[in-house]
Image (cartoon, rainbow, N blue to C red; front, side, top):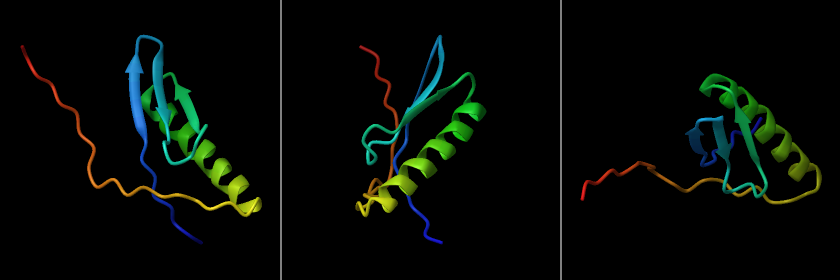
Length: 74
């Protein structure tokens, strides 16, 4: 079994939670709450990676060491 590491961008708005995986073009999902989002994300990423492996495609993994947010007041 191989472990893969990906960057995940998570956003929330009034309609729910959204996530995308920049290393896996077209890999995104949503959920009504954070927990549902994470479960959906695990399923979609697993399926996306399995399909790419079946096709013999290379799996690009994350090289990001840190992600943060920045708030400034002007």
